[in-house]
Each structure stands twice: as structure tokens, then as C-alpha cells.
Image 1 (cartoon, rainbow, N blue to C red):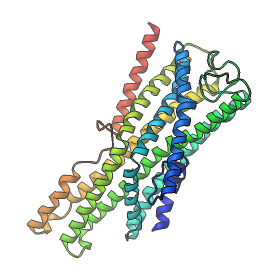
Image 2: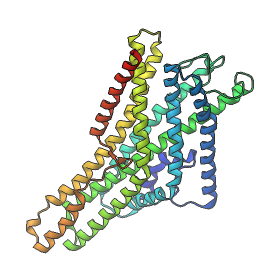
Image 3: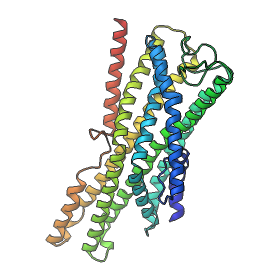
Length: 393
């Protein structure tokens, strides 16, 4: 029903509408121009207020390892946010088609059991979405409001932070400590943090919405296959199931082609940040450098946050693989021996296709599964020891 569809997408739509990335199912020219304008504004704001000044600052503090890590904890996510903006805007038409398919699934006639399955997976996406928004809102609030009171969670240097504190480590061509340049710069950084958080988290939650919906449809497809006797004839039931399976595969191809490059970038970004923060935390603890408990808790929370995001992508991919295997096992365990030989052979069509799981991949190379996440953490942890050894030598 329309109410259920609106409930399933409303939080995702609210967030992505802030930056103009929500692909409207029915979009007129005025709305399209407005969304494009918001996307361009967000892109320019992040690039010129954050990324370019942050890279300028990175060059100036290149010899200070701790300052570099402090810089990269924002420069890398902001760079990934810009990449997400470009890719999602580029793939907006494809995502619109996927959302139309989601709308059709909610609006078409279905049994109460199928509706409960769809609601169950939509609720999972909602819980993850709300939890992610809360964490992001807390982090952004600390970075925006604490500098107003002269407190910062960043590593401060005399090179980029001579007098007044800003939320981000940046270096501008003008004297940012003078009024009104400081106030304008502070406001611009606060706004860009909000829109960057909306872009970064909103795109991730859009992936969750699309994949969890696919998981629900795969679960319903499995139940239809198990209860195929409810159809008038075996041929009618099998035809409907095969057509629906092909439709879901096309839907998955849209999701995979849209997010595969983003996931590859996130894979590299996670590996780099995990290594750098692991190196920083171990160095601060072993060398006895002065560090406040608040900053240590902040650093550990950042590591747990990026690990949680990466683990979430892998868990979602694992769930999808499990649901695809459920369709295969439903076809395999069907009571084919009660059918005529010609009808029984037609089940092979589903078994052959369902035997190939729908893997969400990073760059068409690395399947997003829990085993891949464990290998990534293990490899990144190994590079932490390499950084520590190189520092000691």
C-alpha cells in the first residue's frame, strides 16, 4: 500500500533531499532543477571550504605524523563524500528505476505473510538508519559546538591552529583569525559538516534500503516456491516465479552497478584509516605521550565507528547471499518426484540460476561478506605493525 511505501522510504528521502540526491519516482522539471542546485551547492561547499584547504594544511604539516592522521580522519571521509555525490547523481536515473520497482512491490496485491516479511526487513533498515543518524549527529555536534568554548577533540598544532579553533584542520589563503572572516569560516564549516554527514550517511542508508528490500523479496520468492501448489497450475506458478526471479536479478544489477565503485573506495578508505588510527592509539599508549582521557575515548570511538560501518556493509551482503541460497534450497528440496518428468525438469532452470548467489562486491572483485571483513581487519592490523616498525627504525 502507498502508506507502507511512504513509511519505508520517508527517512531516507528526508536526508537525501537535503543535498538533492533523492531520486524522485515522479519528478517534475522544477523539482529536478532544485535538487541539482542543492547537489552542486553541497559539492562546491565541501570541495572549496574543506577538501582544498585540508589538503593545503596536510602539505604544511607533512612532517608531523600525528597531525597528518588528524587531518586525514576528515580529508578522507570528505573526499569519499564528494565521490558519493558524483556517483549517485550520475546513477540517479537507475536508482529511480529501482525505487519504482520498490513502489510496485509495496502497492501490488500480496498476502499478509508477504507483507509482514517486507515490513520486517524495512524495520531492520530503519533501525540501522536511526542508529547511524544518532551517532553521526553526536559526532558532528561535538565538532561544531565544542570549539565555541575553546575545546577541540582534534590534535592542535601551531602551524594550522595559531589562535582561534575551527572544527576542521584547514589552512586558508586569508587570515581566518580576524573578524568577520573567522565567524564566516566557522559557519561555513559547520554547514558543510551537516550536509556532508547527510550525504555520507544518507547514501549508505540508501544502500541498506535497497538491499534489505531485495532480501525481503527473495524471502517471499522462496515461500512462493515452497507453496507452489497454491497456483491453479504448476506451469502458471513456475512462470510467475521465474519472471519474478529475473526481475529481482535486474534490480540487483542496478544496485551492484551503482555501489560497486563506492564500496571499493570505502574498502581502501577503511583500510587506510584503520591502519593510521591503530598506529596512533598504540603510539600514544606505548610512548607515554600526554593525552587526555576524552581524546583517547574519542579516538577509540572513531575506530569502532568506521569498523561498524564496514562491518555493516559486509553483514548486509552476507544476509543477501543467505536469502539467495534459500531460493536455491527451496527449489532443490521441492517434491519433484511427485511431478511429471517434464515438469520436474523445469525446476532445473531455477536451481541453475539460484545456485549463483547475488554478491554485493567492491569494484567487481571483493564480495562484501563477513569473511572478507575479517581478512580486511587482519591485513590492516598487519600494516599497523609495519608502521610501528618503520617508526622504530
